[in-house]
Image (cartoon, rainbow, N blue to C red; front, side, top):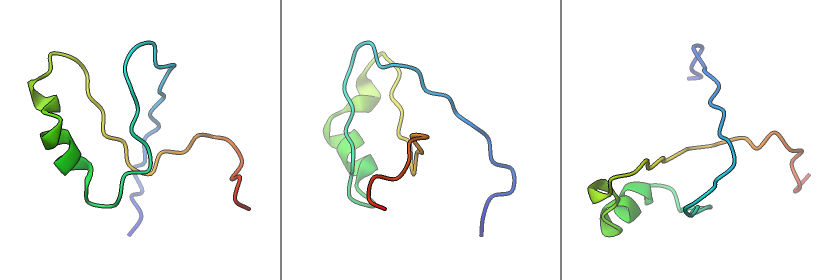
Length: 59
């Protein structure tokens, strides 16, 4: 079922930090826990199915 109350999240440039991309389904929280990200005093985001706004390169 598609969420009819979709909101847009705008993400600016990453100035400091790192990105983990193409995480296997169901593994994000395991990685979060393994890296002890919850103990950090900074912003941590887990984003699912984000659109880059660029055309799909695989088509």
